[in-house]
Image 1 (cartoon, rainbow, N blue to C red):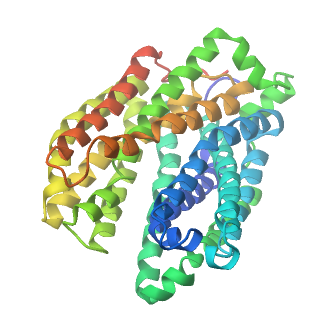
Image 2 (cartoon, helix red, strand yellow; image 1 turned 90 degrees about the horizontal axis):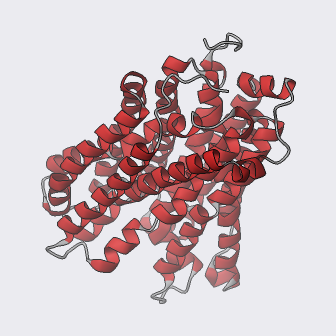
Length: 430
């Protein structure tokens, strides 16, 4: 253990941090899966704007994450990580649960999309606040030579949440008639989130302890009333925030073009039909979970920067072949294998994120700085898929090449961030 740190077990904070991040992953992924079904529920059925409208509301969730990252990051630096996580998860769970009760466009007209937008704004704020503290508390609680693997383990929570959403969607697809699912069955996806939320709150309340590092900083009077001002005043810290944002722009860009894009590519490419498309996604997600754990583990041995660069270079090479196969093949096995390999190295690099971001900041501003770095990246990186589809279509001959080029662009941003950052493996947190 590092000097002046109490002997604690990371398992005292890991379950709560993991399941909180899993609730976040469940919500965002569930909304993504439901977009085609929600479109005629919250907009006029004959409107060509319906799909675009729901996609826009979904994007608002991501755009509002930075606000939550700042607010709950400040809260975590002032009153503690554990309390901030509890508040964020509670708000997130309630917002998602209430969404299941919203009346549709046929019942209240334009108020339906307005209310959905309001709840998605709240969802984005609470979701952004959850990660700001869960990533930090696990890094602060682990031994320095094991921080990477613990960070990868918590990052896997998001993919597990996505997996749960996909499996539940698949179950409801078979359990409820198609017409009934379109009318009311989708509501069960939102209502089911309350189960994960209650479990998460119980774990945080009774199984999670406060960050020892934060408690020590509080005892020594090092916590700040205005951590955001401290960040803006320090040129060195601001540079670390900006390189962290650059990393997250690249990672969110890549994720949106891989795991988040696979269902669309497979559906519009028409090589497979539902539920085969969802099976590919589930297999690729499982590979990504292994990727999260692996990249975090590897970073404990070769460092954060080398891991980022190594995984990115491999992902660039893989993308040149995988995009061709995923978008063209009618062989399910080939598609699932190459989607999994690409997911392992591209999205799997997310496993380094908790340590890569947390280790560069001091304890008294860490939650705020990580919240800004992580969540602001989504504002810019989330547009990769939309820009790609503006220049080409999934059925066009040049699509695989363009798709690969866009993934490579994201990988370059990630590597640039690593090159501009100092190595933080094994540093003493302060």
